[in-house]
Image 1 (cartoon, rainbow, N blue to C red):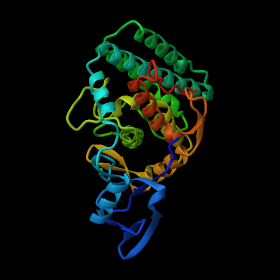
Image 2: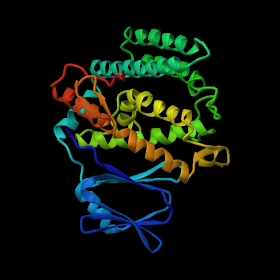
Image 3: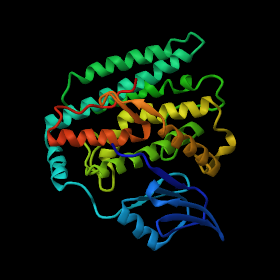
Image 4: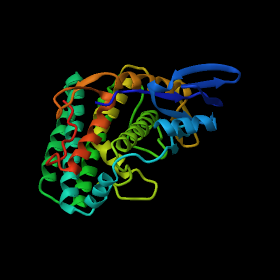
Amino acid sequence: MKKLLNTLYVLTPDSYLFCRNETICVKIGEDEKVSIPALSVDSIVCFGKNTVSTPLIAFCAERGISLVFLSEHGRFIARVEGPVSGNVLLRRRQYESLDDRSFSAAFVRSLLMAKLRNSKTVLLRSARNEESGDTALYDAAGRLSELAKSLLGTDSIDTMRGIEGAAASVYFSCFDRMLGDACQFRFEARSRRPPNNEVNAALSFVYTILRREIASALETVGLDPAAGYLHTLRPGRPSFALDLMEELRAPMCDRFVLTLFRRKQLSCSQFESYEDAVYLNEKGRRTVLTAWQKRKGETIDHPFLGEKVQIGLVPYVQAMLFARLLRGDLDCYPPFVWR
């Protein structure tokens, strides 16, 4: 099993990153603030305007350390990588499978069945914490069960997309109830590009982080993050990474964000407004990323492997299972179903 390594998040503007021997260093002004052995790092994520030395870029490329640049608000800008790794035959099988309607439909169905089940689990867990006796969360969970059954009656991916959209509408209509009356922030409705309130800002930020980690996991096992089945193919779009995100959004991101707000770990001082948008500021990003790293280190029982894995390794495990499916080692894709 792959070892869960650290991600170095650089949040302070005008930081300077460089390497010294086998160590990654960060300077702010004239002071060296961080010095980390490269063996313990698998990715570096820079927010805002920072400078990375050319030797460090080459160092990361040679050692397979992902170097990602995001805007100060968390919008993806670029990723620097070394030579593409992986078995070319595996990628060829992935590309061939895109034209296999039966394969694609079966994969998308299993993916969305897991998404709806995981969303239902988040609703029911929140309902058990509800003291008002309101049945709206249970009603929404029941509606998701009905929509999941309708996935079994179609082989059309377009129809499945419509079912997924209906399920998302039901799920997000209950997000404010899951936040609870004690929470000072409101979700209202899903907004993105840009997010228009604090809850949406936190969700969009965490979704961006998860997408990056899934894309990295896919590349690690030799798959192409751009060759997706559910999300349409577009130049520069990590469609397959977005596909695998669907089963992981509710358990890894939504539940995480709900916990941050319910525990009052995020406050008004950790957000900033820009024109009509709301974003996490540096203090807020630091709070979220610290909690995210801690959460990734926790262990769960993987439903298919039947063994304990760290939450941060779930994207890698799912990528590995899909690669096994393409190689013919599995009859169907075993999605991640959270219990």
